[in-house]
Each structure stands twice: as structure tokens, then as C-alpha cells.
Image (cartoon, rainbow, N blue to C red; front, side, top):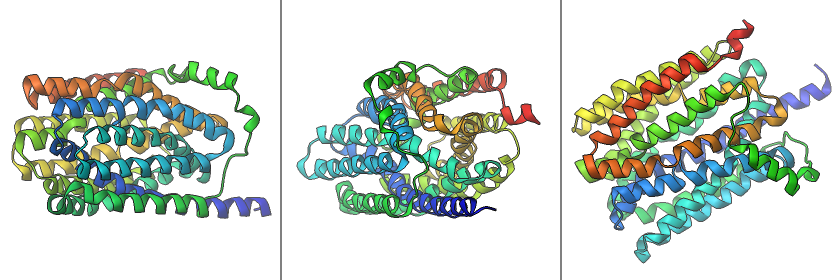
Length: 406
């Protein structure tokens, strides 16, 4: 091994450790936020249809959340990964500040502002995913993505239950100052511990190039159209049902925030214990069948949500949800990392999320309307139908490059 290779190897290992530390911190934040924000908004006067609109604007499948990602990826390919990731942290911290003010001031509009700011922070997602791919040896990328996912999910074993407990006793607004502090700590890790993997090319930051990026952002690349369609359908159909699950459980079955936290912790236990074995299995195997299995696991899960009302059953069902998630989220990144050149990774990660945002952003609003007309059953039924359609697309219109090379 040459001196340059040794230096790269050392910096790559340091990057992966730092990314895992950053993921652990942000995983704690995300797991708490995902549990408390819908009950918080309901307490401030929102309805489930309003939650649906918020989800469509800035939820995980929301319009802004996904539309900012191709821009973030495009910029990260030109000025580097670190600046974009730090900027994302600034937006997250500002979002939590808005949430902290909303309760004491009794201003529901501040929830809208916070949701939008948090959605903008998603511009750092393509940069982070690309940094993982560039810091891992090609044959170990699956394990690297799985390790990052474990780091993100590990605090979810305890953090959401603790967050829900504290929110029920001291108020939801009291949790957000702690989330701001954690966000700042994650930004410090990025700044001090991560070595940049992309050379700066600010000359490429011109309006003409930016416009060309925007015009192609929502068009799936040739050879990835079936894959893009399946991921977009996942965002749409799961956004209709699962995306509003916690709000529906509070509004319909009167679950407490602490109970929602316990459910989240159960899914984190399943997710973290299965993620690494799945990653090692995929290091030399194709990802398509794992995506098919992941979606298929959603069928019994949705049926449980549609037919049961006891908290204990919902909590145990989250073990199945964790397994479904561990076989989906990191596998998407792995599939793209295998088929893309390094200089186009971040932008294409962003393009994928923009495309699924284009398809998926109405999901929350549609789910809220379906809930208003038919209770929990109707949005979950649509979610179930969508799962079947996604499995069909994955089975017939997605190719697996690693299997084609075998």
C-alpha cells in the first residue's frame, strides 16, 4: 500500500467513525421529534387533516423535504460535502427553536415555520450518503451503509420513550432546547472530525449549470426509471397511511406520547439488531430481492394496524416495522452507490428524492382527508394496495447490476 493509499484509508476510517457519531446524535433527535411533533401540533389546535398538510409540505415524504435535495446534492458535488451538511444543521437548529417557541406562545403557525425549516435541512442528506459511499471500500459499502443506519437507530431504543415520558410530564415545548443542543454537537463533529472527499469547484456554481440541474432533477436517469418509480410509490402510499399513524393513534385511540415513544423504541430494537447482518449479506449480493421482501413485510403489518386497537399489539407490531425498515432505507442507498460514478452520486441521490417528492408530496394531505371520511381504516387500506403495486414494479421493472455482473 502506498503512502497516499494509507492516508486515504486512515481518513476514510475516521470519516466513517465521525459519520457514525453524527448519525447517533441526529438519530436521537429524529427519534424524539418523530414521536412528539404530531401530538404537539394536535395539542396546539391542529387536526389530523392539518397534520396531513404539514406532512405534505415538510414531512419525510414532503414537497420541500425532497425538492431541496437535488440542489443540496448538486452543490455538494461542487463545493464539498461538509459545508452542505453544516448548513443543514443550521436549518435544523432553527426549526427546533421555532417549535420551542410555539407552545409557550400558543402559536400553531410557528409549527408550520418549524416544519418548513426542518424540511430545508434535508438538503444535507445526499451529501451525507455520498460521503459514506466515498469513505468505504466498494465491496464493503453495504456494511458501511448498514453501520450508519445502526448508529442512527441505536438511540431510538431509549430516546423516544424517554422523550415521550418527559413530554407528557413537562410539556412538548420543553424537549426542543435539548434537541437544539444535540444538533449543535452534531455540527461540531462534522466540522472537526470529517475529512472532505470532494475537491472544490466553485467555477461550476453558475446559473446555467444550476438551471440544467433543475430541469433534469425530476426526470429519472436512463436505466433507473423502474427503481425511481418504486421508491416514489413507496413515498406516496406509505405517506398516506404510515405517515400519519402517530397522529391517528392519538386522535382515534387516545394513545399517549409516552406510548408512541415505546412503539418507536420497539421498532428501533428490531431495526438495529437486524441491520448489520443484512448489510453483511448484501455486500456481495443484489439488493432488488431485499427491497421486494421489505415491501412484502408491510402487508401483515398494515393488516395489524387496520384490525387491532390495543397498545400492546401495536407495540409488538413495531418489531415487524423495524425489520421492514432495515431492509429498505439503507438498501436504496446501496443500490444507487453501485450503479453511479463518484462525481454524480450526490446529485443523483438528490434527484431520486426530488422525484419521489414530486410523486409523494400529496400523500399526507390525501391521508388526512381519507381519515376525515373513513377513520384509520381508509388511509391504511390505500397504503396496503400500494404495497402490492410496489412489489409488482420491483419484480418486473428494476434491474440488479451486481447480479448481472455475477
